[in-house]
Figure 1 (cartoon, rainbow, N blue to C red):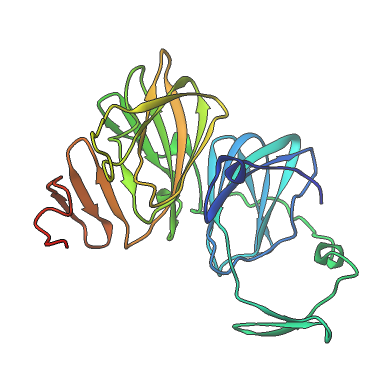
Figure 2 (cartoon, helix red, strand yellow):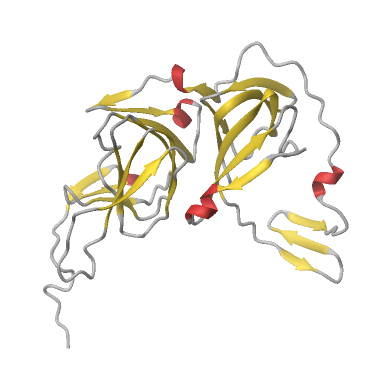
Length: 296
């Protein structure tokens, strides 16, 4: 087991979620086969080729594949092929409530208790993994960009890869914007966290601040240049609306996010709010929220 890990989400300031870049040399495997509890993982293959292990079976993976690993589901890991493997691993961070008894060398969780060993890493106890020949057909949880029909609107192509691969709690969208085109309407989330990775081209990130607390609100966005390799984290509740605009070339990026049913999405241009859990969209009055209140 070996790999080069880069914590891109942490470096960009992500909150409760993250993205790791995992670079593998031929034959390397980054982790033992494992199953997550609360966290659903989504992998996107940047380059190279290899195999993914899913409950005693192996499946081929290659560039531009999206793989969904459902929580409480198959044990999984990956291994690089002869040309190496370069992937992005997206997921929510799990915070399992545990209590430790350091004198007795044990700890308990919501499901039971376990002994605590500090003399070695748990991966050192992992038996060698025997990789079978890859299956002739891939599972529905593995899709390629080329195999997903895009939504086309106004010079923008969006492919909902994770939905096509059966994700339940998170999403991953592959977006292509022609020169000068926005990735979508500027918006800000109350509960959903998003992480963006630019795959190709160049452009700008446009950030529009919230009007709350502003004596004279200016809705002109602040801009930041982006290019291949740029990672942008958008934690929830900031009140800052975001969107990407392509530059002189086509801008290609990945948008990953949580699917929070209690999320409220704010669109400053149209003054609209979207209540995701009930599927309702409406406009709001931008009057000061103190108007009409009796204050001493």
